[in-house]
Length: 247
Image (cartoon, rainbow, N blue to C red; front, side, top):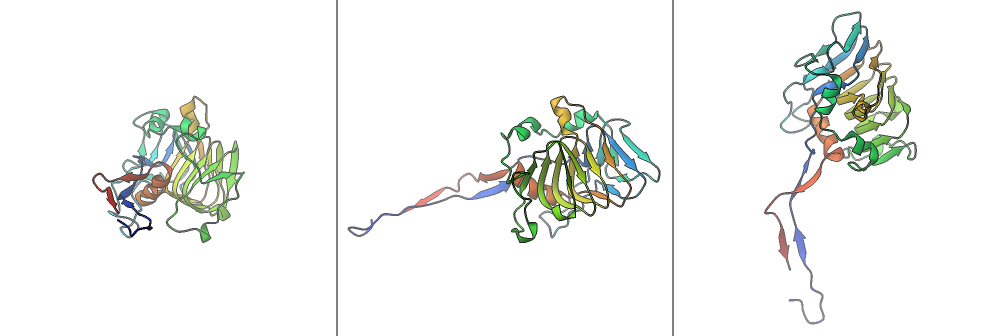
């Protein structure tokens, strides 16, 4: 007990760990409505680009390069671009690929399953150069169509409820979720996982993703997916038996 007239104090502690909410990437690029690829330049690779130095335990098993419906990957010219296990997963329809993600897209758009850190255009685009490197924010683009370029490069989970165009040397580490059509112009790089056409889950018709000429890269990186998913779909979970209380 504290001395007479003193104030009692109590210390509570618990150990918690981050988790990813069960979010798992199934391909470097999942496109419910298909993919139109112009030319044989660039990379769409489901082999894990993660390094042991980026997270533990490091690289995971390869996923598909592209996940889409039968015959929905169309490439005009050049050698086949997608690589992975398999290079193109056409084992089910494009809609079934989206459903297999177990992502509550309606809840994402309705704000019931994720709380964005930034909402565009209400908030200014975040400045990643001044941001703590351990923060993988959730950015929600509340527009029917939006374009990003090199100055918007960053990390985390980027959610576009409508169409999204990637221009120039735009670089993103983490998760890219696009409700409508994804258009890739220039030499973009997305390392993590990219998912397009999600509005099909709401019964909407969506045109195929369009990937123009250029050395753009869509890469699977399990570390970047994990870090982004911990903020987007996960959080902190108490480890049982770690609660303690001290006077």
